[in-house]
Image 1: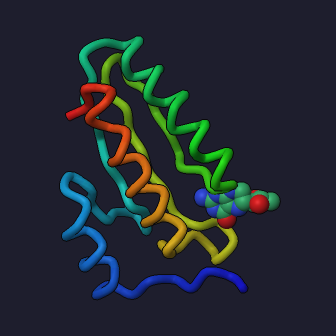
Image 2 (image 1 turned 120 degrees about the vertical axis):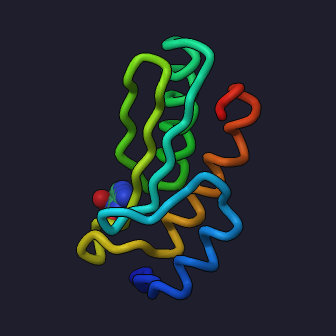
Length: 101
Ligand SMILES: C[C@H](O)[C@H](O)[C@H]1CNC2=NC(N)=NC(=O)C2=N1
């Protein structure tokens, strides 16, 4: 069954459990700062590995030591679904290990 888009209340509840994440442009978004450019790229590769496991893919951007993550679900027309909250949670779980803040 296709994932259902979350409403604003549901997104607010999700964000209360994901510090640093925000809702913008119909996406869950987070900007991390790493200790170096290579640290940012290493975390990007780790996220990419998770994304391949999940078959769900965020937009990832590296600007020197900044790593941006922005995700919604293409198959429902670019809305936030449970799949996005699951990916955001997985990313949060690895962030501290990369020294991301
Ligand atoms: C065929 C494949 O399962 C789909 O294209 C997947 C891949 N990754 C995806 N990623 C995201 N963010 N949304 C999707 O709808 C999506 N669909």
